[in-house]
Image (cartoon, rainbow, N blue to C red; front, side):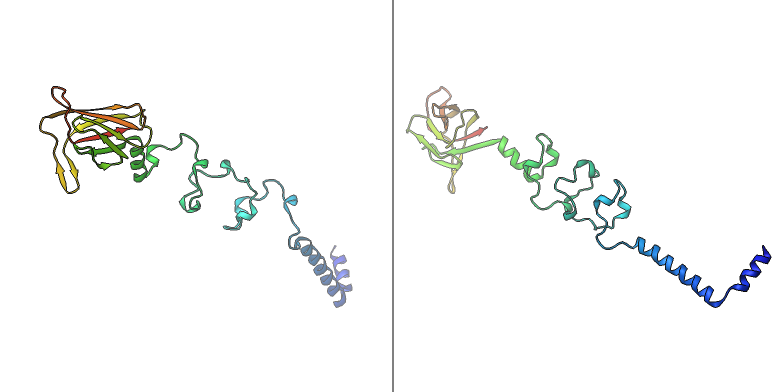
Length: 219
């Protein structure tokens, strides 16, 4: 072996060494060219399923243009991964909320107040003894003097609601009108017209008397 090496070294020349180096560089360059791919030469068909993981994707590298419509469903989204900053203003409407999924604790204070108003007292009014509406949302009050009967028109059907009438002082402009001294009771009843409620005021013995009263209607 030693003799063979000595013979081979004896035959090496500067030209031989240079040729070998040139051949090595040429072969190496060919290998590099084989892995340096032209731009856009690799498409989705060349990528094996699950070959690209999140460690291979730069932050912010995937935009909405790279995502097919309906390409991301709930199974791809981590719990609590989407916060308020990721949701566009007014992007979520009633169509995106399943029935029965919102609870009282999900509502804002303003929302709870509005909900209570919808399910609480819907209509109210105060009336002078003469049948003048001095507060609330009644459309009109019809009254015949001395009858103790007031027909309160609410402007919409309240036939399925509950009524409560009470005798009491009412504020008429800057003045306060007290109830009649001997007025004792007030009752509210539905009328033939579903938009109206009949209020009757009377003395303790049932005699009709005109007096100021308040009416509350819950629907």
